[in-house]
Length: 447
Image (cartoon, rainbow, N blue to C red; front, side, top):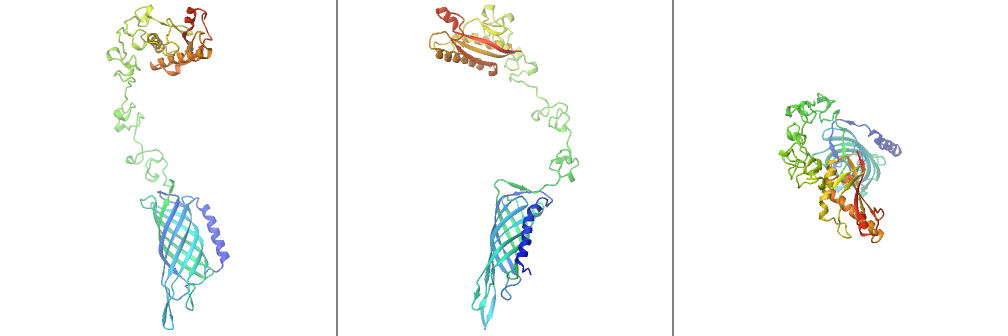
């Protein structure tokens, strides 16, 4: 029997403080995911007092509540309240007196997992607590004895069913009471519920170097991923398209699973003409014209035809004559042979200017080497300068927006308004002011 309280507490302290360091490398065999976090437990079982304060008591009944928290997946701290009830009688001059007593133990401690299997979790535990007992006396007899410090050592085994938050444990502890010179054995089941906070503690899995879910000891190719159906070895995939050869209709040409592993010839514009045969792979067109639309049937595709509604000639970019061509490429600019007209004091393009902007679009489609084009808006000097600056910017942006809607990439266009700052004629005459109200197109970048 342990009777030295300081020595006992020293032993328990060493044990408790050594648990975190021991938790670094427990013996682990098989893996299982179980909930980790704050735990609540309900205890109920039996206790035996080895040196009871009365003669021949029966086994005690015990119950209690515990709360715990997993610091790591092998180290748990916990605390609780346990009540133990014992029944006994004594003969007092021919009278039988009940000598029932109970102890209430408030305790705190920790547990360390030592071994884990597929569903079970074995652990050792230790702690300290304070035992209060009652009643003190019955008639002239002392019954429960004195209160005492309790030193708790023991362990348990925990089972994890297919219920993520629940577990069931069976624990056995010895409560050593040094002042009373007593000890009690408690054996009881515990039902625990875990508030996991989304965290999961993972018991280390068996070795699987290639992470294919087959343990190395059962894997015929432990360093290369492979399915279980092939004993962990990969099946051949000659064209590396992710479809094994035995399921691939074209094992030497990569292709998607939707086409049984055979390549799908692209048709970007979805017009039924494969890209490799399509003269206009990004514009829908009839098959008999090699995938290019050509409304005027002049053999010049609409997207580069400057006169798509009038049959024309190649040398005039699809227009009937040179006079119909309103846009010409120069070294540093796209020259417009007609003005772009807007509503008065507004940034609304008039319909009569749509045809020239359509020719600008066709030019940009045809001349892909033009990487950046600045659309410049200019005004005459009539009106306040700040107003004219804003108006010219809005008109330049209107032209840019028109070309974007026609399919020109936004990163090829930039709008800039100059207001009345760059006149090309005098603002003192009507003709000069008309010339100054203009849109210019400057090539900024060109391959």
